[in-house]
Each structure stands twice: as C-alpha cells, then as structure tokens.
Image (spheres, rainbow, N blue to C red):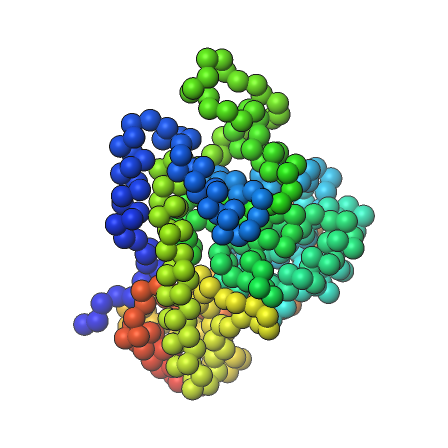
Amino acid sequence: MSDPIPLFEISWDERDIVNAVRSIGRGSYWAKGPFVERFESELADYFGVEHALTVNSGTTALVAALRASDIGPGDEVVVPSMTFIATANAVRLVGAEPVFADIETESYGLDPDSVREQITERTAGIVPVHLYGGPCRIEELTEIALKNDLVLIEDTAESFGATYDGQYCGTFGDAGILSFCQNKVVVTGEGGAILTDDDEIAENVRLYRSHGRAEGDYFDSVDSGSYLALGTNIRMSDLTAAVGCAQLEKVDELVGGRRAAAQYMNDRFANVDGIRAPKPGDGGTHVYQLYTVRFDDESDRSAVVEQLKADDISSKIYWDTPVHHTEYYRESTDGSPDLPRTDAVADSVLSLPMYPDLSPRQADRIVDAVRAGIDQSR
C-alpha cells in the first residue's frame, strides 16, 4: 500500500534546529532578542521595504496594520469573502465594518469593478487578498485606493515571494501583511509581519504590539519605560524568529520546490478534461502556497474528493464556506451580499497536496486519482 500524501509538509533542516538551540542556549532574551531584529532586517531587505515588523500571527498583523492606519469605529473596509475569515475578522476587531465585494475568476482576488461599487462616504480602506499564492489585480486596486484616498493593506498571508510586474506582493499598498503559520511558504509555526514604507504606520505598530511602550529593552532598563499609547502584547518571540531566519536562508529553495512541483502537475493536468490547474495571470509569478484546481460544471468535485480519500491523498476546500455565508457573518450583517462569482468559485475549487519536496511519483498519484474521480462523475 502506498504511503499517505498529506496536504502539506513543513520543510525543515538542521539550520532550523541550530538557530532554535542558539536562541534557547543563550539563556536570556527569549521574548525579545537578536533573532527578532535579524529576522525583521532580513525581511525588509528581501521585500525592499523600509520596515518589517514581526508579530505573533498573520491575524494580529492585519489588526495592527489596520489600527496603525487609523481605521476604526464608523469606518467601512472593502474585503473579499473568498478568504480565510481572519481577513474580515481583523476589520471587526478594530471596530470597523467589513464590506464584501465579489472576486474575479482568474486570480480569485477582488474584482476592481465590484470594489468600486462598494465604496461609500464611510469607506476608509481596502484589504485585497493574494489568494493561494498568486497576485490579485493589485495595480488596479492600488489605483482605486489612490483615487478615493483609501488605505490599502495587502493580505499576503498566502503569497510570500509572489510578484506582479516584478514587484513583490505586499509592497504595493500602505502596508502588507505576512503569515508564517505552519502551512505557509516560510514557516515558524505561528507568526506574522507587517511590511511598510510608511514611518508613521511602522511606529504605530511598534507601540501597539508592545503595550504602547516606547522602544527599548524592558529587562535592561532600571525603570518601567515610557508608555505613549494604548497597546497589547502581540510580539514575536526570539525562538520563533530564530526559525524564521533559518527559513529565510532557504527561501529560494522553498519557493523553487513548490514551483517545480506545481509545473509538473500543471503539465500532467493539461491532458485532463474538466479541470483548470492554477497559474499566475499576465505579469505575475505564483508561489503555490496552495495548489488549487477548479472543476467545470460537468465534473463532480465530491467524487474526486472520495477518490483521493480512497487513495490516501489529502485534499481540502479553501474556502468551503465563504466568509459571508458563515453563521457569524450571516447573523451579524444586515442583508446577504450578492457575490455570484465568489459562490461559483467556492463550489468548484479543491486544494491538493503541495510542498517543496513533493516528488514526481507523489504528483503522479495525485493527478491519476483526480482523473479517476472526474471520469467517474462524467
């Protein structure tokens, strides 16, 4: 019997272990230490931004970025529903209201025309999502934000290293956020970061993530420090950042492995009817954090899922329930937004196993199982 194929595997090696041991073995500065400063510096260099500020998750990165941009009660923020619920929740957590716009069906990102329709005098920002590892129509969305004097914060949780027109996703707007959760491209277990060239946003994030305390080392200071604003504790630990530094050392390997595995499956799926393999749009590059295929109306997704399960191959529907259909948002939102493309995509996509070390043999098993499931349903 063949070994199970998981949805994802964390790519780690001795570098991750060595850095973690160094952080622990230092015997101090486990909360804020040299690996945090190094990770932030290296992230800023990689993305070519002035500031990269680490926090403890991608969700808190979104909250911090929104709050640092002065978005709060009374404001509306345009978001997609085809995303992890954190995108909308972060808006609610700062006291603003998420307004759902529809997506387009190439990148599955926000449709600029739908965004324009949702803008009102209360609109303060837009949070586009670079979904599954590829860029959305970010240049058009940036133009909309500039024309309407709106804050634009890119949710780049799934697209570390993806580009549009040679520029990294996460660097087009006022700020971009990253996630380092266990199934992402660069992994620290949990963790996140805010990218920005805006000094004021960066300073607001620094204060908010550490109880509003002015920069300085709490444990090296005689006094308790100066507290300038309301804040909380969402800092990244030195141990977490130590793993992040090791992951960054091999980011080209991590992205390259995903792209190679994805290209192999794309080539195999080219001869399979009824399925659309993922690929970047014109001018974009994809990192395939999720390898998400879409089925046509004649193919039964559930039959494919059952065939994969029978062959011990994992799969998952991202997102089985778009955010606007979740119980919480149905009950707490006035009226149900009409998002036909979001609903159609959500009903027809399936994410298959993807990780840098996915072998051709494993990829062949995945493609063969999908083909068999499609054949059964047609």
